[in-house]
Image (cartoon, rainbow, N blue to C red; front, side, top):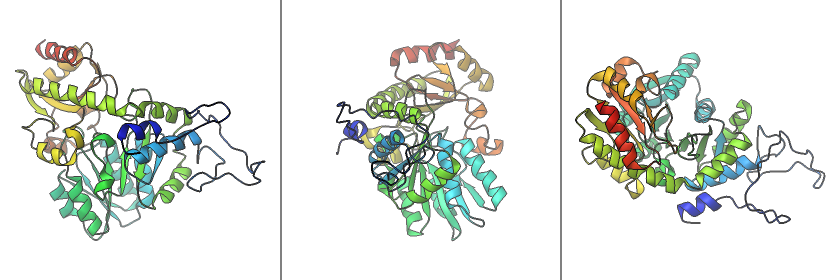
Length: 389
């Protein structure tokens, strides 16, 4: 299989010879027969783990993992009950007392907060740096266990040159962990550029319909066994039903993401000329300082469907705009079929210290827009009337 859509649809081949069914079923079972009466031993999965309890392994979840691994050009994947469950597993699997982690000061606030809390509790030094490749590379030392970063930062869409960071980290025997949620495997595959582990909040683009929570880790190294064992102990595997919904959603990822990116590009260009908008942050704009690096990294010149913009008039006008949209919903997620508008200082960036938010440009006038699949002219009209009212 070479094509993205073929992998998304046929990345896990299932066939029930008795019924002629080729869609994987939902295995809603807590346990499996042990020992198996037919074989006399415990059944093993394709990665040589025992199939005995759904907290450890489940065939529906495994079907999703096969597809995610193929889409990210990895050897294996693990599906989790949330993106935070996936991130916690990475932290606990690799960090020891005295270790050091380098992380950009901008990113999903809860991810950074969790790392900071773990560092304070267990003696791990967390070095927060400016979100660019130069600052990250300069911060790596002999004590650094891993670098963790986002392909595009949340919420100001700074694009970090993952390729440069991962190369330098690899040369220094430092792990590179990349949250690729905003770019999706359709636009970028960090593992191709020496990243060690890729993280996804599958809640977002991969499931794609704003109706399921999930996370994933993908790697092409032998670390998957260690990560699997920590998932087993934490009990953070994704439920079979949620895995089934995600399997259904990922089949249309390419069609959805490309349409969402086109919509976002049009909206960004519209807002960039709007008299009520002070600034638009979107790497797809030629005027963006991150446009050049985004063009180097991202396949098909897809720049994501999330953009942020600053409303003239500060917090008052920003919140008024948030309340005045009619089609666009006010909600803190992204990547789904519905267009969502959120106020980062009370959502994704809430836990980032105020002094860091100011440096990063996360002001009280900033709104983040996740563009969905509605007709783009309707979205533009909705934003226009909300801004002008």
